[in-house]
Length: 302
Ligand SMILES: [Zn+2]
Image: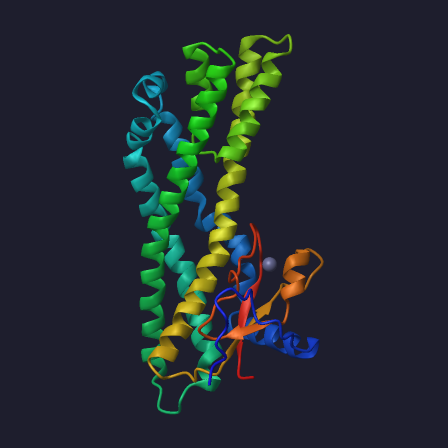
């Protein structure tokens, strides 16, 4: 019988002995030697995000209209751009999720019921990966859009409070398109810092633009890294859940948290290393635990 967790319990705290964790890390590597490379390929896989986010900037020539028509309308005028981002995200998400799903089948193979057809298991895994990618591309765009509304609102209200001219506010807005509210605030402060110095306007604009490009690249890399691990994990999780539901995998299996095992692992992730939850339960949350988390899930029979 699977262990049923109380709804609010964070995760099963049972810790596996280190040797056993190391062994399962080995299994992950063997099952998919490319798994460790996911981060390295993230930038390349998700490269289009940077270009698309920059593309939004180009469409913002009418920034002044933003203020008079209100932020919501302004954002809705960006819908085609966000639709393009969603379309651009689906394929890389699906590629990564498929990798996770295939890894999940490899990890589950020793535990499958004898009559399980592996080719069928892989095709089910592909289906799950594709379904995940479609959903995640859509929800990610909604999240990005919500962030964008928040960032622009914040900039407009601060700029109005500071009594900046409509031209200056329009410039402020153009300089935060594509950034989340935290980075948008950082950029606004950077621009004000430049303006408070005795610099030529062209110098202020050039430096502001350079900082903006840097922040935009930083954000798209962050999204790429986090979404890469998320897609890989969700490919695994969905494949296992489906296998339990289809009766091909015993429901008494557990998922084990595996860190990259090097010195860059976050302390919160170290604390989870080797912990387990029942196969159909989620850690809170499953990897990634934080931006740039590199953790993965193993599968064992306790
Ligand atoms: Zn981690």
